[in-house]
Image (tube, rainbow, N blue to C red; front, side, top):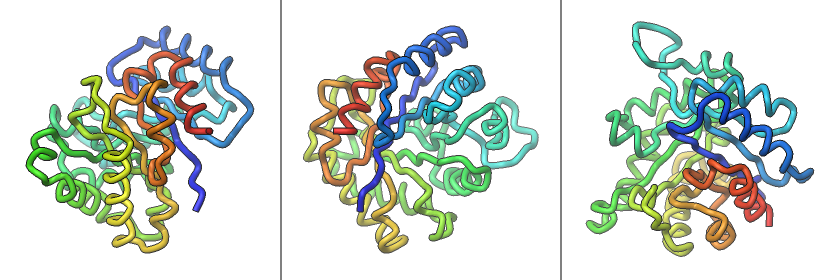
Amino acid sequence: MSRRPLVAGNWKMFKTRGESLAFADGLRRGLGSSGSVEIAICPPFTAIDVVASALAGSGVGVFGQNAHADENGAHTGEISMAMLVDAGATGVLLGHSERRADDNETDQALARKVPAALAAGLTPVLCVGESEFERDAGTTKAVLDRQVLEGLSAVPVADLSKVVVAYEPIWAIGTGKSATPAIAQEAHGWIREQLRELCGDTAEQIRILYGGSVKPENAAELLSQPDIDGALVGGASLDPDSLLAIAAAAAS
């Protein structure tokens, strides 16, 4: 089954509102007419409205980097799914490895967040991946099993095709290392098998992105793998030309 590639740029804690607007303007100028690849930007919360406004009508998605599962409440410092939508977001990253490590994000919390995102009309991107210690210990598949199956446990089968999964080997994030295409494909193929256990043939519709030091130089080889349906890009997404080059690799 043909799956439309998605290239999402995660800015993490970078760019002011002015810098975000300049990026959006540059990205818009560089966009081609082809709709074969979906592009999304994940700016900081403070810049979502600026980026969404600047990219309105372009087809580029704007994703939050996190959100809370509750509609509202006494959660100081948190953002609800509805607040993301109100700011102009169309999707949300959930369970990024940095949030799992730095903010104690658990699979149980994500099991609540994913259906909350769907209920709000957002595209959830569930991030999964193993640490270097877990890979060296031979537990990569067990880690992926737990993160995928628990994270999606509360999503109705009929809604699973709306979810995106992003495989990001933690040992390759921000390190300059990247999984070889063979290593990445092996992990993506395993994730696809777990999705088949959850929803049968619907698994063929679910996009699985690779994230881990993706850049224009290695994008084409990674994205040519059969179960890699796009990229979650970190540092290389801070420049619009770099992100567009990765999107072009996905299109080819």
